[in-house]
Amino acid sequence: MHPFIHLHVHSQYSLLDGQASIQRLVDKAMNDGMRAIALTDHGAMYGIKEFLNYCNKKNG
Image (tube, rainbow, N blue to C red):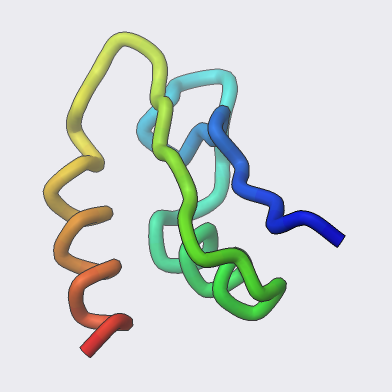
């Protein structure tokens, strides 16, 4: 099977469209064996620093 990567993901920072926390999204992707994930929140970049920091922390 070919690797799968979500390229359209919304976090709690996409008002009215996403509800999952950054940590939950990253942990779920890792548990499902995904090597990458794209954060595509609507109209804001509020979660990008948290996303980057958490991904770096998880990758050691």
